[in-house]
Image 1 (spheres, rainbow, N blue to C red):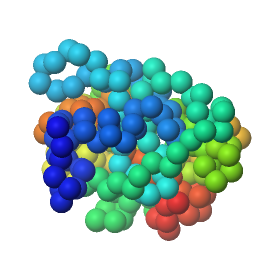
Image 2: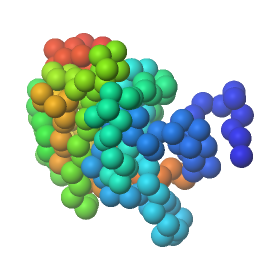
Image 3: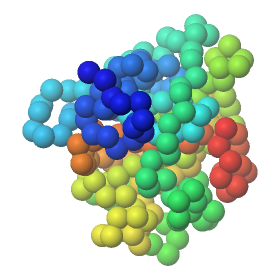
Image 4: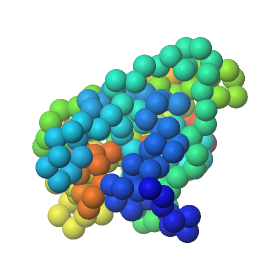
Length: 217
């Protein structure tokens, strides 16, 4: 099965997702690992999908299934993930709202809105851990980088964009990597929508200071 080259690889539906995930081997955790359970596709199919798709800038990392080990980083063998679109609802100022300039965006628990918003996203509690490594330095842990994570709620709605939650900013947050290159977020499990499997998006910035300038690595 192939996808026409002239089509972008974002929001093309489940079939295109499968092609992208397999062709790029993103599910093998080339550059990052995410502590998620095996994901289940939409449409009532109970077959688990060992993948978590992501949208990120050129040098950012890709999410991987929880069942994938981090042996690549341990052995100094990793690859840079190909460039992808940031998704239609990044909230990073690239296509409208910019949550990254708001006080309170740096947090580990992203289930509730902050600032002037007060809503909380209901759903299955989920812990997400990503490990960021530096491919230019033999895959060494990248400490001090900033990771912006965002995703839809259990109804498939994105805060700041979807009509029902446009006044909320939950399920968005930034964390700085520790000495091991890790960041951890407390969130909820995202929904399927319009043929897409449950997925999360993220961008990696060189530092917290660069986040407010919206300059990803």
